[in-house]
Image 1 (spheres, rainbow, N blue to C red):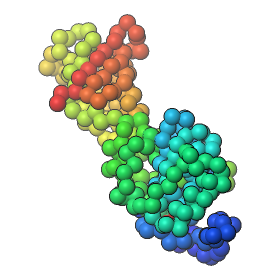
Image 2 (cartoon, protein in one colour; image 1 turned 30 degrees about the vertical axis):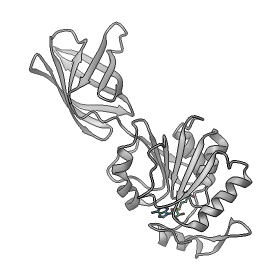
Image 3 (spheres, rainbow, N blue to C red; image 1 turned 60 degrees about the vertical axis):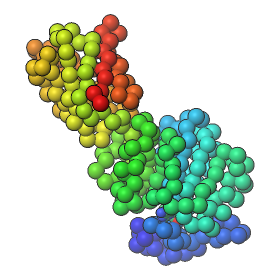
Image 4 (spheres, rainbow, N blue to C red; image 1 turned 135 degrees about the horizontal axis):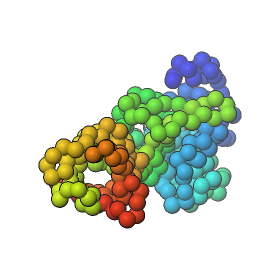
Length: 271
Ligand SMILES: C[S@@+](CC[C@H](N)C(=O)[O-])C[C@H]1O[C@@H](n2cnc3c(N)ncnc32)[C@H](O)[C@@H]1O
């Protein structure tokens, strides 16, 4: 990224900053230098994350504050930026003030690897692949349903739900934190057996599983999916195709077989 930015800008002064701080691309950060997101990709990122006014957006490595400020301006949210460079924090605060958004937007000087951002419901990034990879374990432990959206850079092995492109050619990626469902579930409501168990082996938003009726394996499931807290799977038993969809809340599941309101299914994850 450093090489790319230097090649693009020749380390030139830009129109960014204000009377107190004239910014150059490649202003030194900690783990990655400052390069600003363009406003059109920022809008795409926030729209794709379906930011609503009750969300809390955290921009990790917030630079001059553009993402947090646009989030508050366009979506009416509370937004927080975490930024290591104190001059950028001060500039971002002035930018928020100039936009009249100081009540809704705040900036914290600190290291994204140290500061707490667990209250976020949307996390935005423009940090580089290796930083994203280091942040991934923490991101995956966030509240299920939290959206993560990254300008330009992927997050290692986490397959994005959506790839975005702006009119100016920038790309971004969107993920939704999946509910943790790994383990053995006892299901009730499925006809044909007294005891139905579902054994799940999870890989981020995807899972494999096996389903047993009264202790006998009846089906393997290779393409189970989680969209945040929404779990869905399909299986075939006795030549019939079944689908099971529903919501996971902690260690409880409630859903429907074959999308039929007359066939409710509930589940409990064994401790
Ligand atoms: C590529 S810029 C992105 C700025 C802004 N998010 C945007 O999209 O315009 C990355 C920012 O992360 C900051 N940064 C680098 N390492 C950091 C760290 N460990 N903790 C907090 N901020 C960091 C840099 O100072 C820089 O402002």
